[in-house]
Image 1 (tube, helix red, strand yellow):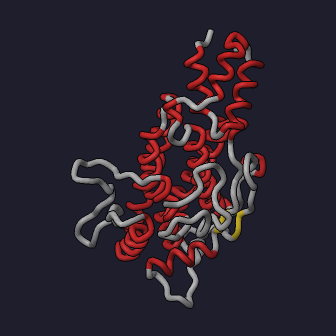
Image 2 (cartoon, one colour):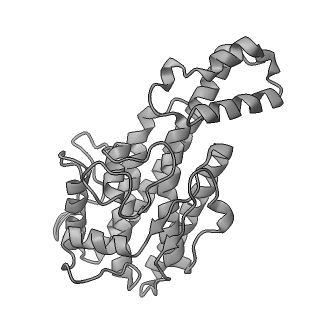
Image 3 (spheres, helix red, strand yellow):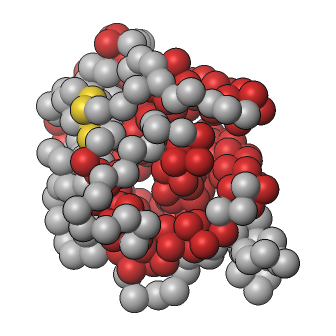
Length: 305
């Protein structure tokens, strides 16, 4: 039997907004929690003190938007197709994926890395959608074409009249992947303190760990290929987007590798959701759309800082 406080916390932290709280409350009654009673129901609809910040549902939906982006990028690069339509539905406006094609990998190992990461990211989408249930957001519109050119120009990898195709060869693919992977790690690191539900926190830790493995693979492959200068340019561009603090780290130079970006204590650094959106929107100002998400992301956490 569930106590009033537990039900109130479950609903407040699992729902993304007031409408979701009502849906969850009705679901609780159907599931046999009618013992709560009308008085507790009214209390449960009011956000608890712990719900002053973004709810766990809002945070997981924010993560789901990022996983949609990564899954689409890797699925197209590794297999030449987008994720299945049945994994794109949900709340908000469902968008399409623009651009992209399968990469012809010259190095078998890098092709194998791409395929493994692609399946991991698809599993992340499945997992978060399952965890969120009816509260999950739809896949927003994702740009895998113009966005990379804009990012490459911002980094100085190409001139204003050139275009950057991340699918042209494996070097371009790795540089494009570098844009995402480090951001994913710092996003989960930054979101972890905001999550109240221990089950969700454990899941976020698992997702962070996998993203860190992916980032390590990409950083190592870039270093082995001697793409330190290009990676440094991307790192500097991310730093110029996410705020005034110098957070980002490149992969090192010809003599010294920096494959695990950490602070003086050996810890990974964090980005706030707003800082993450600054990077993926490709704009250092507070915006609601742009870059890889030309129509913005779905869910209540949707504006950059």
